[in-house]
Image (cartoon, rainbow, N blue to C red; front, side, top):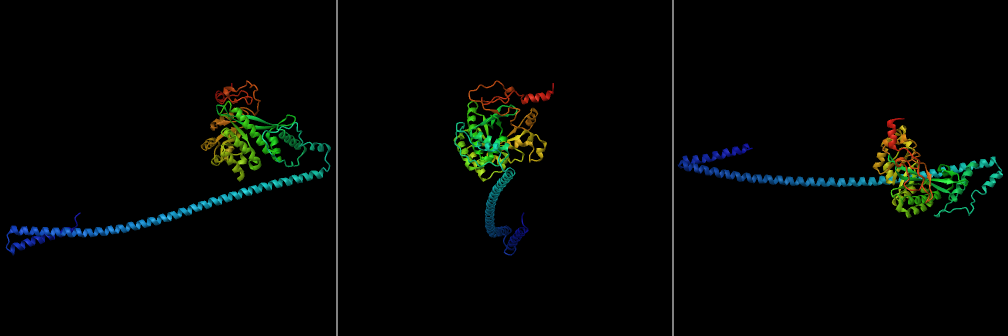
Length: 472
C-alpha cells in the first residue's frame, strides 16, 4: 500500500516541474514544446533523486534492523546455554539423589536381614531354654531312669557296621544332641536316624499332567523312609526330627542324587520329561551343607533344563543374603525353581521370575475357594495369565475330583497333580516288567517304566460330556 507521504512528494515533484516549464515559457520566451520537454526533464531528475535518497534511507534502516536481530539472536543463544547448564545440574542432582536413595535402601534391607537373623537366633535360644527347663522338670519328677529306658538309650545311635549302607557321595554331617522328648517321639527319632544312616531312603514319583490332555509332563520326587520293620514314614512324620538333628543336608543330598539318577533313566525314552526335586530351607541357609549340593549340580548342569529345584513358599518369603546368593548360584548354572506349600495368593511374579522361579504349585482347593480372591491382589481365575506374562507356569496340586478339573480348566490352568491322576508310587527296579494298567485315552500314564502306571481314569473331555448329559 502506497504511503501518503509518497503521494504528496510525487504531487510536489509534478508541481515543481510544471512550474519550471511555465516559467521558461512565460519569462524566457521559450516555445511551449521546449518548455514541456524541460519540465519533463526536471520531473525525471526529481524522481531519480527521490528514488536514490529513499534507497539509501532504506538501506540504513535494514542495516539497523539486522544489527538488532543479531543482538537478539546472541541474547537468545546465551539464554539457551544458561538453561542447558541449569538442566545439566538438575539431572546431576537427581542422579546423585537416586544413588543415595538406592544405597539407603540397600542399607535398610541389610539391617532388616540382620534383625531377622537375630530374631531367629533369639527364637532358637528361647526354644533351647524351654527344652532345658522341660528336661529339668522331667528329671525332678522322675529322678531315676526306668530300666527299660536305660536299655533303649544305649543302642539308639549304634549301627552295626555289617548292616550299614553308605551313600555313594561322601557327606559330612554334625549330629547335635537331640532335645528331650517323650518316649514315643524318642523311638521315632531313633528309627529315623537309624534309617538315614543305613540309607533306607526311598523315592516315590507322582506325575504332573497337562490339562485337559492329561499327558505326563513332569514327576515330583517324594521322599519316604523305611524303619527297621519296613514301615514307611511320610515326610510329615520324619522331617521335624531330621531338621532337629541336622541331618537335613544329608537327606537333601541323597534325594538330589536319586533325582538325577531317575531323570537320566526317564530321559532315555522321553527327552521332554522333567523331575521336581525338593530342597529344604535349612540346606539353602547352611553353606556347609549347601556346598556339596552345589558341586553335585555343577557336575550335572547338563540336566538343568529338566531338573527343577522346589522350595516352600515360606522359604522364599524369608530369604536372607546367604540364601539369595545360593539361589543365584544355582540359577547361574541354569537350574529353575518351583514353589509349593502355598498358603495364600499374595504373589509377586516379577520378583519371583527375577530369582529364577518358573513354576508355582497352588492347591486346587485354594484356587477354587471364593474367599481366596478377597485376601489376594488378583482373582484366582486371572492368576495363570498373570504368571504366564513373566514366564511362570501355574500347577494345581492336590486334585482329587473330576469336578475340580472342570472348574480349573475355566481358570486356564495348564498342569495338574493329585491323587485323581496318580498317587506317589515307588520306583521299580530296572528291568522289571511294567503292569498292563493304563488310563483311558492315555491319561496320566508314565512316559518311562519307572513307576507303576495309575489305574484308569476318566479324562477331562469325558467328564465334560458326562456333566452335559447328566446322570444315567
